[in-house]
Amino acid sequence: MPGRIRPATLADAPLMLTIYSVSVLETPISWEYEVPSDAEFEGRVQKVLLGGHPWLVLEDAQGTIAGYAYASHFRDRYGYRFCCESSIYMRADTQGRGLGNHLYSTLMEILRRQGFFAVIAGVTYPNPASEGLHKSLGFGMVGIHHQIGYKFDQWHSACFMQKELSPRGEPVGEKPLRFDELLASGRLSDLLG
Image (tube, rainbow, N blue to C red; front, side):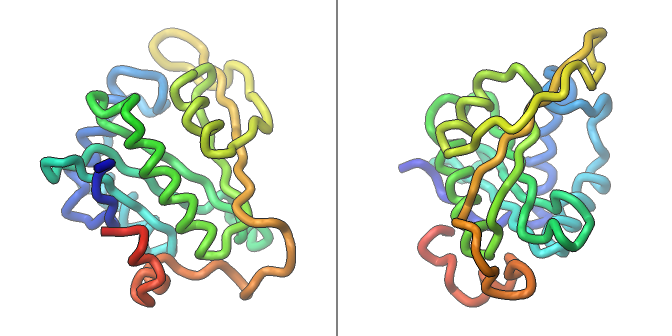
């Protein structure tokens, strides 16, 4: 079994922060230099959820959080409302086992059901594992910003990848459905445990 995916809660923030802290302290995957405080990280989770976007966790067979994925606003201008940005972080010991693919593909399906047409992912470049995950799910490269970030005494590039979630056409509503409303309607019961 690939693991149970469920909506994140604020109670999950400490374990998610533990996963994220590895990216901050040991890799250029996150360009933050300091691990956020518990309160700051909880605030980030709350901002995503209050904004109507999904934040998911994947539990391993022991019921421990193996990773998390979420979407957020891509840009603030109202014309961008049918596009969002996605992120995924997995515990190091779970990488390469297909769990990230399972989690991220579930996030993509939820975004499609919400009414988003496209999703953007920013990836430190090169990062073959992350690039491979995104490509396996249908993301294509749209551009590279060369040496725009500085961490661990060297410059890093970032690539941006895009996935089309639905064919372009008239949106069903004025804006995408909120995650909490879609969840409450029961229309995600086939995806979330």
